[in-house]
Image 1: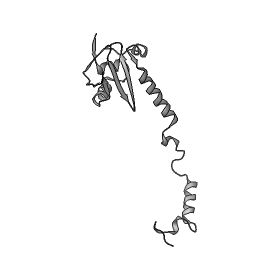
Image 2 (image 1 turned 135 degrees about the vertical axis):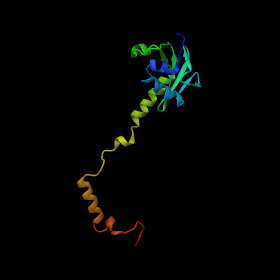
Image 3 (image 1 turned 180 degrees about the vertical axis):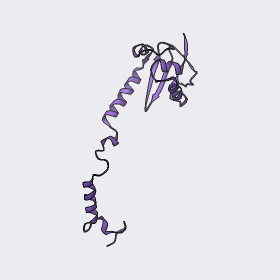
Image 4 (image 1 turned 90 degrees about the horizontal axis):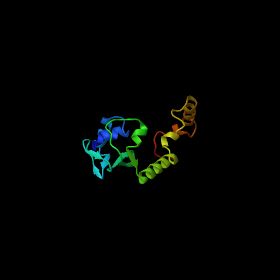
Length: 140
């Protein structure tokens, strides 16, 4: 087998769980072969350079083998070689994710508890509290 559809190769090389997922990503323009946007039926051959965008990172691999059947992970790893630039970019992205966690993950509290709600109500009701003014404008 010299050539194979790119969607089938991506599935066999275990980049995507199903061929239909691979086809959807190709249709969205997230897969390029030799710097040309691919279609699902585009054929890939040994030596081609395939670039896939996954999130914010672009993964670039060189095709080393062609197989129409999906095998285990060790067999799939023999079908491609990732470029050094791609490996470095993935490692940089992983480091950035580690150093800059998602802001919403730092939230410790959700809704106020009953005690918190009572404290807020006391602050509103007290003398000089929030409840003394009927508007947001300043009144001397």
